[in-house]
Image (cartoon, rainbow, N blue to C red):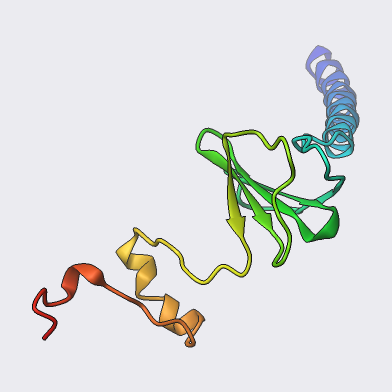
Amino acid sequence: MREKKLHMLFIPLLATCMFLAAIFGYTYSVKAEDESSAPKIEGLEFQSEMENQFAECFHIYYYNDDYTLIDVPGSGQFLLVPEGKTAPEGLDENIVVLQKPLDKIYLAATSSMALFPLWMPWITLNFPLFRNPAGM
């Protein structure tokens, strides 16, 4: 009989714990989404952050006038500047400025390199290491 009382007490206690965990988990996730961690860039106004459901190693922030900041924590920040515009004055010297249109990329992973012609057939891959130095 005592065993049955313990079993009946355990189920409501477990349900209460799960309910509280769900409430606190939801509150935490909503708070994290509401707070913007976008870097402040003088002269630009933060608009939104790309919703990224899977990758956790980078963030993409959108600013007014089509400026975009790619933030790779521990590696660097890259500001994409729209064609015909310039980087804002007083930009942090650690932010690398990339002027659009981007027509060149550096790709170090050979496994990815093989897929580029499939993804983007208009891209021509250039392998300077494999060229004949005599130009033949």
